Length: 421
Image 1 (cartoon, rainbow, N blue to C red):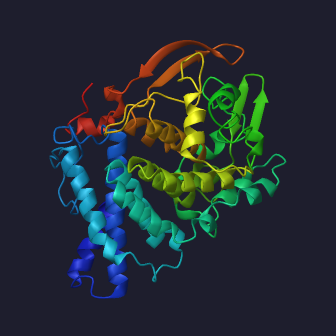
Image 2 (image 1 turned 135 degrees about the vertical axis):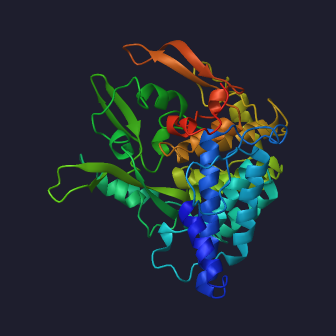
């Protein structure tokens, strides 16, 4: 945010965005500022709720470079916070061009800008804008934008999964709209490295009952073009998709100290397609939603099935809701917006798109967005020696204040208003 504000101030000092390069640079700075504020608010604030946003705590929206120490920053409302994100996106939108970028996939290029806009307006509950901007990101032939899972599957992984993870973050892949780097151990934890155990990992039981290895609307998980990988032995049990590479950022010339880091797709066409399907569902344009859901499914699997409202509703009507000891793919939903409720066609369609999004984004953190927006309860279960649930020790319900993470200690110690508990 500081870098974005410095750039915006420098552009104004030069007389404003008087050239094409400066126009594009201003657009990217505005988007970086909006994206950073959005991500912070999604971690440290409650989800956007039209009924309570005027009183729900947002964060301070930084629109200028700070030049003083120990400044008292008041927290604004979520209503104000989202209005300012919206303003930055709309100001940047006419300048969404990337002719000056040498490595566009590591910048807010035009497609990534529209993908971010679509993602934000999904949270902002402006469904028409989601459809409009996701279509701009995907273009007229979205099938050409989706990930090549056959290529992923054909990339050998005898023990070292890096060839496949490097392919997943390949900047030349149409699916990867924008890539970002992070200091993170994720590449070690989301792999066949023997770190952690079944108590904390995405284990076989979870995969077989809810996602990667469970029977889905298309049939067996074995129809997936790129099969999930398993690393099982002793107390270790993990099912995963090769996504995040293991990288080291060495801190000295002698290679004795390093920071673990990784690269990940912050925006990708496959997810943008599913977000458009979700917006179509909220608009009750179920035919268009089925088209997008079918396109994603046939790219993820070898199934030739065509999804319709009828077969989607039949599939989810025949499924029980998730319970801690009898898990399924179907969760009770408590969205913060108007919908037709449980048992409706709209609910079945939403269950389908949320199921697909969970698969598409597994191990990338995006499930948290849907958990918050749809008020999905998250349970903490104790697993027994056989890797099956034994009891429930805690739950994160729809109104739990912990859905807004508490601020870091150093931030609160500096006087910033903490989240209520």
